[in-house]
Image (cartoon, rainbow, N blue to C red; front, side):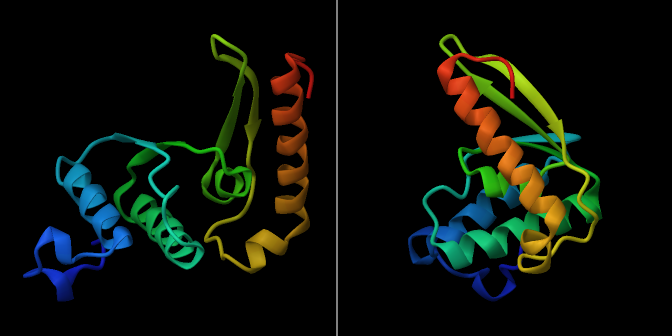
Length: 139
């Protein structure tokens, strides 16, 4: 399900960072959860691997119905992956805004990210994050 068939006999130290992330996702999905929480799972990956894993995550969601709570500081990643984005800010952290993402599925790394809807959501969320950093609850 996570594309590691050719590496089934490899030891963990022989796997790339992206492959190790796939193993972690597979381990979590083996429990057949309704919800899977992920805290910046792609943060340390190169751009190409990150994009591939984002698409695999969307595919896993479509195939399994598992919901993902995905924590990220990457606004574009949040828009691309999300159906709803929650902007947190302050200390202690508080919800400043919740934004519904209405991008059609399936999503595509190029076409989706170039669409006017994606750019509108990205712009809105950049402003919301900036406002939350100032302590302003308005977006």
